[in-house]
Length: 355
Length: 219
Image (cartoon, rainbow over all chains, first blue to last red; front, top):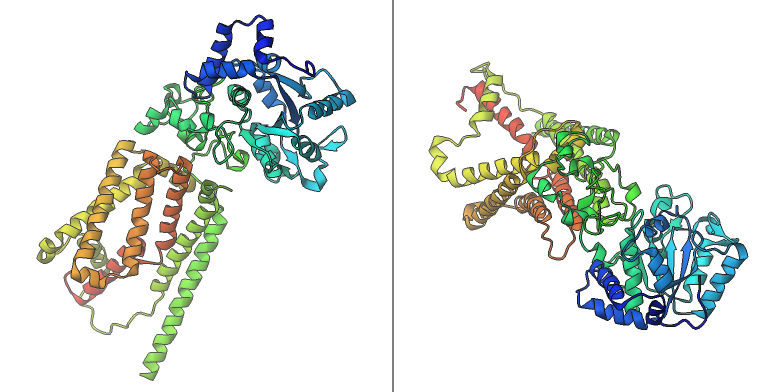
């Protein structure tokens, strides 16, 4: 997919492809809007992108299910096609590239050599660390070695999906492969997390577009997430929130409350503690998101979401442990109480006998 | 493990263990104490009736003291009732009880809960002001009184902050975790300090009532 050694600027290439300035500005306005940038940034973005050269991107897939790539291919603003063909040079990606076997690895090495220090690395999937990382290898090389090797010459890394961002499902208890996140391994390069299982396609493309425009990663929160998309909780922006305030909750998925679109808190919705753009950016061309479709948020973009108890347990329930533990506490408490009372009786008898 | 997971998991388990252990300890420790032998002729055999009567009669101040204790009594009732509404009628709290007891009951709207919480909070502050400004009360107050007040007020304040999502820079999940941890602190402290009256009040009133009835005293 790489076009040549001396790529023209994006502006020249887009003009060559017949894209009008109006269309290009519309595209920039859509991206700026999705990134919560002011409308005045659209022309700035257009100018910056027009002068930019095609960005070399190396995509590494590790312990993953390809769901993130599937999600990205459903992006519509900008589309994956427009990203790949107009703005980036996707030099290495297992699922999408034509090359296979040694040719694929050679293409990656060539891209790394040519764009050393400038290329962008996108990672989906977690990295197994246990037993020397033998649980996932590509072309005889462990994911850990590949990541370290490729990250060495990268300008920045984007962890796409909850697995790359936090370890995800492979890291779920008992984590048999010792799965780890990119940020657990790469400490000397800027890394941004775009979590979600899968992530919202527009968030992924928005982050890439931001890097192309400004040459750096967007502003991040403490968990390395782009604040523009992860600043609010699902609950903050949920259209069902008025029902929560009024105390109107669906008790079952098929009751009257559910049919009336009441709050899904009682059915285990994790929206109040989940940061993502599902309630605003939504999915399938801004059509819907899980809560709108009648199911509570499962918090798939949060660290360790798989190990945080049932998806259907309300957030306020907690995990109170075993009845045996409480029974043991009661038994110990009663024994200590009786013991202290007997001690007191003995003392009293002693005082009476002496006195 | 983040703070919220810690609050929802291990912290809650240990708080419940301490609550149950401490409560059993205090009750068993009192019930099995040696009783002073009463060798006098019983004036009445209605000791159970006396115990039950005292449990209720002591809930209303005696006529002679009524005007002097009106302020504390009214505020005391206000914050106890308010606290009961907040604890037992707020839907997320009911769900927590359901996860342990296996059944739930109807909730009140969030607005009613918020009003009850604010009224409760003001009542508790007013009672603290009285404790601090009354020379006698201040003299007989110790660490237990102030700490018990603080651990009762903390869940109310943190709960209101979480509901209103006012965290002065803290995220909602942090506010929720802090609220849960403040409740667990209340649980852990409850059996060991003066808050133990929650389960000892009727035991002590009943004992006094039975004793008085045996001696023929009016309770």
